[in-house]
Length: 137
Image (cartoon, rainbow, N blue to C red; front, side, top):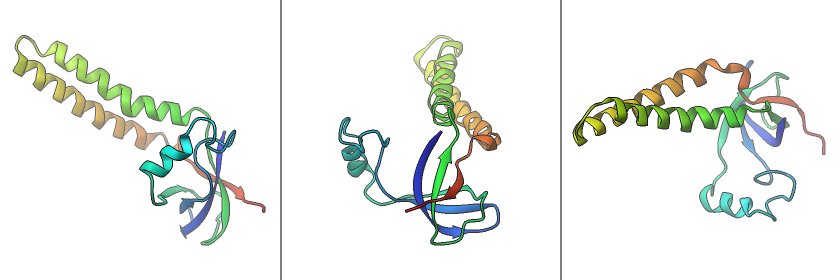
C-alpha cells in the first residue's frame, strides 16, 4: 500500500481535498538515488490538490496519511495509456486501405479508448485514494 503525508484543505462528510506535504517519489531514498525529486521539482513547481475519500472525517488543517490501494497506480496507468493506444492501432488496422482511412480509424480508436478509460475509471471507486489516519509527528 502506498502512503503519503498530506494536509486537508477542504472537507465535507465523504471526501476531502488534500495537498501533499513533504518529499516526492518513494520514501526509499527521498529522491536522492534515482532523481525523482529533481523531476518533480522540474515539472510540478506548485503543490497540487487531490480529492480523496475522507473515511475518518478529518477536518481542515489536519495532517493525515493518504493511502492508495496496491495495484491501483499500475491499473490506472494501463487503463489511461494502454487501452487508447491499443484501440488506436486496431482502428488504424481495421479502417481499410489508404492513408486517410487509416488516420481516421486511428483517431476514432484513440477517442473511443479515452472515452472507455474515463468510463471505467469512474466505476472503480474501490481503487480511489483515501485518508487512512491522522499523521503523528
